[in-house]
Length: 173
Image (cartoon, rainbow, N blue to C red):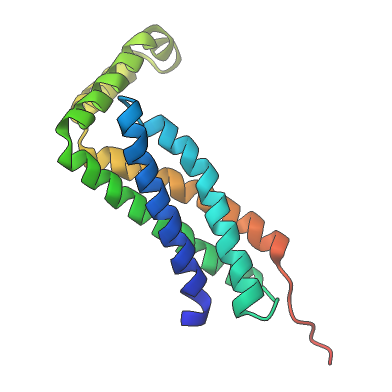
């Protein structure tokens, strides 16, 4: 089992740490680092998944890769990345109430700026529910959202990369 997941653990941990560090560094320069960190996540997630699957294929599996092996390695990699990123962001926001308040204020301002457009598309009731939810948002909500947006592209890229890198052993001798 270690053979299958050693590279996934390494690259998932690296990606998660980079994502958490990215959030922290971006928070030093922007009052709301969440959107920029999502963009960074869209770059680091496929890179992490690719490296985990590629290294598994080349160094742990003698150059062969079945689709299921690629999906397993990819899944462990992006889930670990998401868990670490979520934990670090939650810790950063939990220890900095001013940063969390700035994020909440920024998101409220964006909601108010787009009020008419939102109401025209989804209605007054949906706008009010969103506004209420935004006011009751916690640091965990922000961190969990970041983690979810690492898992969704991670699944997509695992499928894509596993398909592209797949190379099965031939059954003939």
